[in-house]
Length: 326
Ligand SMILES: [Ca+2]
Ligand SMILES: [Ca+2]
Image 1 (cartoon, helix red, strand yellow):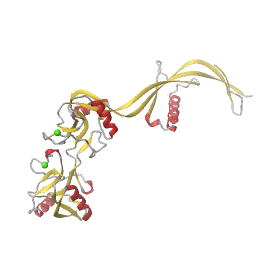
Image 2 (tube, rainbow, N blue to C red; image 1 turned 120 degrees about the vertical axis):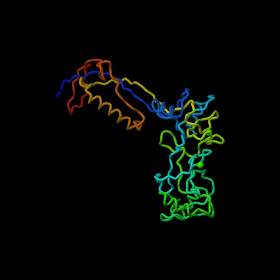
Image 3 (cartoon, protein in one colour; image 1 turned 90 degrees about the vertical axis):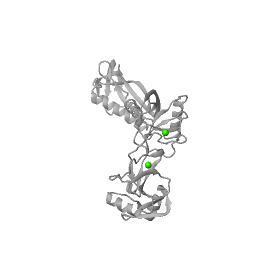
Image 4 (cartoon, rainbow, N blue to C red; image 1 turned 30 degrees about the horizontal axis):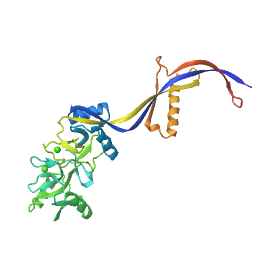
């Protein structure tokens, strides 16, 4: 039997395992403005709290239970997010009246053209005449007057969309068409409440406190939880406690023993072992939630020798068990 004598060592190394769980929240009991709180959360955690599901609201409710203060969350009113209804186009030309847009009472997300030729933001539920767009030309619909959303549906069904005003000449043309009416909706609207992580628009199921949002002081474009856990719009410069979004992380150190040659501390080999371990986890479908890394020994290596050993390596086609001496 052909045999070859090789040296193997019993080696010990430490593996750092980080398990990332679901999103959690942390209540910070110090007073900050909304933007200061956002900076803190982004530097030390993930962001201010984004809350969407019932489960997430329950987590938040437990955290704020018994806290008799307003608490910032990651919700804010994007005051400059004006868009045109047609093809969701961005805005290049604006023609606001004096002191507009002012988001009076905190619910003015739609825009009408006043008969003086200037624009006003207004609550979308008011019923006004409106301008549809038909092959680029304005069509004034006066009967029946509709809310902005119903006017949008009407224009999209019968024509192209609500009308987009791109320049002052077109604005003059539309103004001349409404001289017998006080005003008419145009296609401009605002994509208002959003979450701080910039990935999620706030949906209509937000649990606003009664009468909120009201933009009471004219600059209420940040959201806080009130004493009852309902949402209120507040001036962003007010000082409140705040809730950060964080991630539940479990960190474990595992000791790994293996038999290998004395070159196992070679960087390419330790990287290869780590890769194989991650592959194994991937096969079991959990790799996305686990981060592995080696923890270096005091001497800067990954593995330390526990015992020296010598093994008779079996060459191919031998069926006998490997002899080893440790
Ligand atoms: Ca207004
Ligand atoms: Ca308010």
